[in-house]
Image (cartoon, rainbow, N blue to C red; front, top):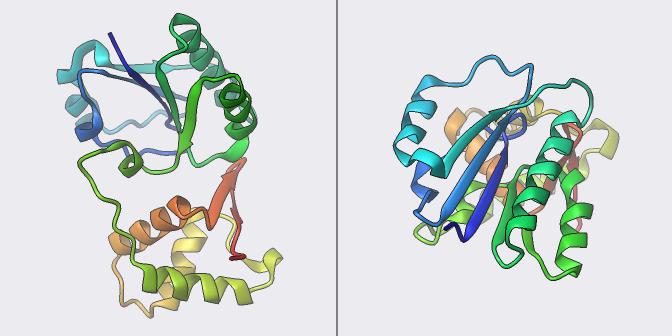
Length: 196
């Protein structure tokens, strides 16, 4: 019935766009035990898709607890039909060894960092000039002094652009950095890959 299975690490990404849901997409949104606030507007937007969207609250606390649940659900989907496309939506690179293993075994699996990567209808537009300015700036900052949290990175970018960009524009620039793989996340900490 489904050709594409998308598992969302909701502790890691909350940007869910319903326009990427099609009749052939199964979207499973994994919510951690300590996530007590899910926007009702988002839940209401996903309801019309029926069984194409599934919200799953998992129990268990601790580092990487949610990752193990996602690996479990991914395994269940792969066991149903290895010929489908399997996607983990997360900025956490901790899934990459599993994804690489599955790819080596002929299973079409990937991790995406932005919902834009799912849509055939949306062309990803990246502000290359601003990204270059950010990259050049961060490259000069010693690795141990670079922002480690998304909120501190947003603050850093705000000061870099001297309040010339609003919060939405700054968030878009951070998404663009994830898409271009200039930054990634590991256990909740932002890491940098700025070398060309």
